[in-house]
Image (cartoon, rainbow, N blue to C red; front, side, top):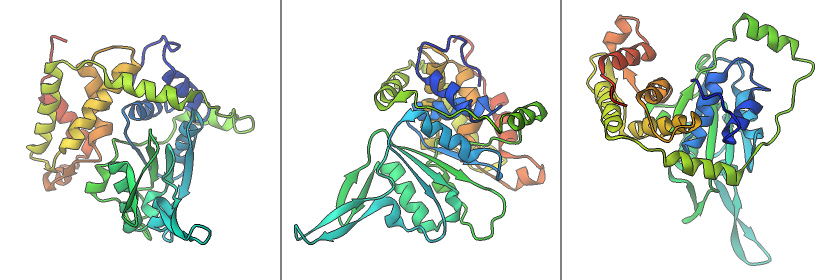
Length: 314
């Protein structure tokens, strides 16, 4: 995902440049992750071990002055570890709420597929509703509230993979992949003198940027284009489960955030195309025809982009 060259006009570029100190050669993933944060969404990093998922998540967290918590998910993590619980206080003679890990601005959920479905559901409920309910009393999570979760799609023994209904709660799903030869040599050379990622954006600045990204103008033809793409996923012969309305809204939110990063006040079709795979690939369920044809989600989505005409007047 390309961004404009003038990087000094908005603080979001400071986040991107700071994260690049820790994550080498994954500029596209970094930019999409920052765009998802500006769009107010949650991020799932789904890839094999050792490619930098946790490094990217921690670098993003370190670059922003936000209250943050990290949970290393294991089978014995309980829902109350996340949501909190009530404890009897002898001095007051009442039960007092003890906050859980979600009471922060940025939660790093490491290896989310290693914990039980009950704990996963507790986290995903908070992600959707922005609050927790303990003993019948609701507690709002701080604003903004962002979850960056990592997941290993291989080695399923002892894990609980997120079902499609829960994957839909994540605005984007990103895969880092292996570095190329030059990037890996760069990583090896920098092992001894790694630069520390410093906070460069405050909570107030982040909230301000989120508000500005939300105000990016969307032309009627862009609304029609996004809807045509969503409708095509629901009627494609190789897809059993197409894009949900939440997914359609996420496509538009991400496109607006990308436009903001590109320092434009309006969305163009290229913005939609650039984020289409990251927003949609983890949401659609391929049918038998796709498996027989050995096509993956990205290939089917690429076919849809080719079939749906983008507005030419913008």
